[in-house]
Every structure is written in structure tokens, then in C-alpha cells.
Image (cartoon, rainbow, N blue to C red):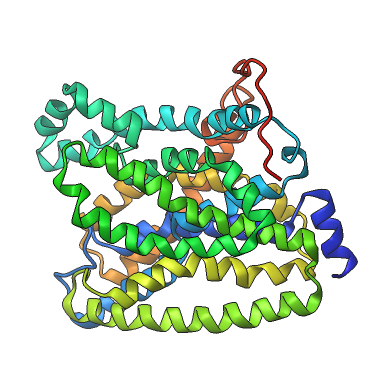
Length: 381
């Protein structure tokens, strides 16, 4: 491995990973730009006009929050200072980093839909829902106030299984456990949804199955520690590039059907496998970038990606309403939302991160919450 790559790993700072974090944050933010106000790919327009939004989504949809999860757990496993820290200290830090902003934005996004509801006349249903105690339990425990929020308690739950990822560093073949997630998903849909309290059971099983994604970065960190020379990294790039082209081809066949119908399709097993494996393949494809030099300013921008994820719907909702009211054609609708939302969201995150007392709201600072009392360390290396 060249000296630049070795220095990155030794220092715990991988600029290529920062670059990936930033790209993922922006693309996830603009995934929501690809569909119409009711959630479908512009079904009221002509078939030819479906092409731009659907192809735009075909690119942004390959990253998704699962790649964010892999990046987060890779950083958790790779960071040298965490190798000898107590398990409870690690979880305490992650709870401040994930759950404190989660609580703030849960409250915000619980009431934010009223802006849209007042326009379309269903604000009564929203207020009625807010008076139900059980609904608040779903908001706070499952992140159901908005779809993007459910990722945060899931990521925290997956982080609780950190000792498993340490074990995967010693036994890299355990990363293949990730393929069991497919069978687990079938079991969830076939059996658990018939049971009471299905959403809570679903989240518990989802955390366990997403641990398969955590075994992948754990195994990769183990392989890096064993020694990843240039040849191995280039072989990794060749495999990942070939696999990504194949998987993206499967997605394109799915999106061709969406273009024809103007509605999302839910019965394409091959497209499911493409979505399932693409985050892993993309991460593998980016690992050889360790061999290249990247501008250091990327490392300064990368931490803002988490805030972009949290704030993305603040501007997306009014943008969708305004473009819908003006009956913009799909191509202008999508790309206007893309550019406007990136600029407005990035500026807002920067503004929130500037005052020391607000940086925690977008994950750039930690609230000074007292640490846990002393516990036995948990290191399974």
C-alpha cells in the first residue's frame, strides 16, 4: 500500500471516506426530488416525461441510508481510539450523537406536516393523531414522524451490537451473514405483520438483520489490518465495478417498467437484490480510492452530511407544493428541487452549526450529558 494510504489509515482519517459521506448525504437529500407531490413518478404526465425523474431516481436511489449505515459502522470499527474504550462509553457517545438530534427533529417534523395539511384541508386528521399517546410512542421509539427519522433509532440499535463487528474483524468471512437478511425480510412480511404491535416487532428484527450490514465494515477493517496491498485493492475495484454495472442494469429494467406505467412497481425480485447489495458494492468500489490523493477541504465538509440528512425535508415540502401549484413539467420540477434543496439545506446546516449552542442539532457537536458510571470494558478482539 502506498505511503499516502498508509498515513490515512494510521491517522484514522480517510479522506476518500469523507468524500463518500458527503456524496451520500447530498444524494439522499435529493432522492425526494424524484417524485411528484403524491409520491408517484408524475403519473399525470405523458410517458416520455417520466424519463427524467425516473432516471434521476435510478442514480440517487442506489445510495440510500444503508450506505450511510455502512460508512458509520466502518468509522466506528476503524477509529483507533475506540478499540480500547469501554463499550458503555461508546454507546453513550453514539446516543448523544444520534438520539439527541433525533428527539429534536422528531418534535419538529411531528408538527411540520401541518403546513401542508392546512393547504390541502386535512389538518383535523393531523391534530387528532397528535392527541393519541400511542402515536407519540411510535414517534419517539420508531421515528415514524417522518420516514427519514426511522433511520436514526435503527442505526443506534445496530450500534448496540458493536461487539459483533469487533468479532468480524477477527473472522472476516462472517460478513456473508448479510445475505440472510433476504430470508429475514420474507419472514417478516409473511408472519410478523399478522401479530399485534407489528411496527415494534419489525424494528427489532430490522435491527438484527441490519447487523449483517455491520459485519461487512467490521470484516473490511479486519482485512485492512491484515494488510491490503495495491493489488488487492485493485482486484476489489474490478470486482465491485463489474458487480455494480450488473446490479445497475437490473435496476434499469425495473425503472423502464416504471417509466411505462407511471407508478412504482413492487414485484421485481431482481431489483430488490440490486437495491440490497448495491450499498456494499459501492463501498467496495470506493475503497481503492485510498490510493489517491483527495483535497483536504472534503474532510471539513463531510461532517455536514448528517445535518443535510436531518434538514432535507424542511425545504423539500414547500418546494414540492410550489412546483405542483405552478404545474411544472417533470424535468424542471425534479432539477429545480435538486438544486434549490441542496443550496438551501446546506446553508441552513451551516447556520445551525455556527453557534456553539446549536451545533448539536445537526450532529456537529455533542451536548455535555454526563457519562455512564464505570463499567467493565467489552472488547472481543
